[in-house]
Length: 583
Ligand SMILES: [Zn+2]
Image (tube, rainbow, N blue to C red):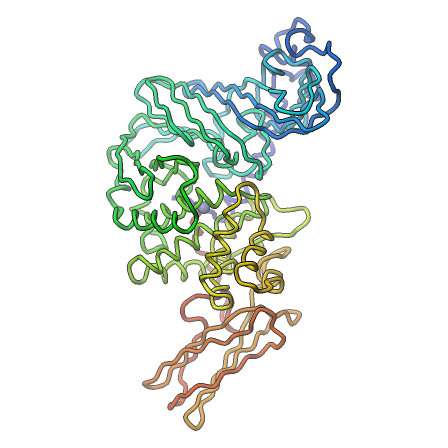
């Protein structure tokens, strides 16, 4: 099992840049990589016959200039055996229209570039951008752009991002095409802005007997499988998975959704789950966030994936050996399943305003899974989740919502959000504004589809609580460089039947973190808990409380339940990094 060690996150990026450059130089336009016409790009560069005919001709008097457009729909065909693909983007053109459209494209061997179904007049391909021109068209859903490519058998960052074929645990071959944040342009022209929502139609040609899964509504066939999904982001919707050994097994109908598992014969994911608890979770999450946003069927498939899971709309992938891995969660399979189901709302239906807003997506999936563990799962499950988050938080090399200029690449910081994210965005706010307000803020934030930012989440939590959270978010959430978490000096004295407990923040520059600090004091026979409240706008570094306590205090424990990021003054720094589970 792999996880996001520092080296795996950083090292391969250089390789990626190199590959992308090679891909561009290796296109059919290699004689003139900076510029080429559609006619030359066609048929592998073997020569053209002139490019100004057909439906893409420029004979009309339509608008000229660069088009700004939203992609309404992607029509993508993929041949599982050859990795040949065609891509068509239906554009909603902004006023005043125009005759050229530029879109991100990192695919190699791009051919047959079209404009409104005919050959494009020109197709310039430079710096990972495809600029296609044709007849000038007015505003509205007036233009489609298409191209043909062969998807390279490459993955990035030691992850499944890209296209890969791997052995499943039963010895068969699992295939996976996965775009992730900003990555849909590896498979053809695609607007890789993570905030954009589109409709998708996939048509996958495959050998007979192979089961193909893709997002949304699935129509399986003997050698052709199609999927349709509406209103989804490219990071998760642009995905195809296939396995000849998958067996379909209905799991149950919960909250109006049919859960169906796909596992190879040796798979034990479904059998390791408590159906009643999965059903209770579905009822709870639907009551909190509203109806399941992607139809009546939710497929859950096992595969030999690098991540523990991935949230394709209506089509979740889980690591096929999840139930056998030693995770830090008390019930890893249930936790990861809940996390991916929550992503159907938090990530898919509501998505990232920008890659740097990545934290809210993972924090929400983690926190809501945790809340269900706290209210409806066996004793100790929620506590294990908190301890894990708190344990990995000191390792983070970026603030939860990085404000560095330029912004770090998502693959450089996404592994840093899994511990601090749910703690700073939600768990640490519970004693300050109440869990009810936290949940109401999340539900309100997710009630709006499309790209949303961490600042908008703050606004929703403020509206739900009636509190100003500016100082809190400035202290805990936004920042540049590596985070510096708070340090607390803790002291306790006992006299005349009372213990006086004082906590003092000792942070560089006198920075004060809004928080509630729990402290446990123990005597020979007596134990007591105190919660020292700095409030949402602390003005003093020290907070003191006095409680009845009959004995001399022998031990003082800071944050015994792992509800707060921070260390006791003088504590030894943790030198051994723990695995960060990514999913
Ligand atoms: Zn996740």
